[in-house]
Image (cartoon, rainbow, N blue to C red; front, top):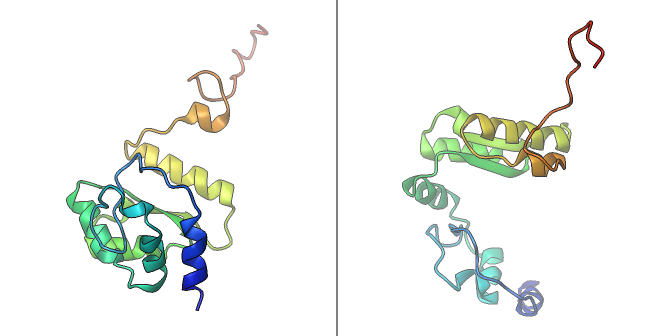
Length: 144
């Protein structure tokens, strides 16, 4: 019953072209230009089957080796692992039950960093320089 009202709301939105490739869970394939800017697409997202396995398979075919689940829990990361048959550390979940969001995000970013993903730590930590980390104390007997 909500689809007509939902479509009307989505029709009033301003869409912009994607700046990164997007694999649609509606089609299971790489989204063509213009697909994601249609109110019909988003209405279909609300009522059709989610093709998560197909989307994950497509991402793997396109060369993705690391998957990050941003939603609560880790069920999608587990489903991606089962779909890909990939090493356990290839699928990371950010938010865990009873866990701190800040800790979850920083832990996931650290795990991505150790897998070779570039993380802009200076931007994350609000530093103007690329030198990340606190000033360390000098030699114990040197006071400058």
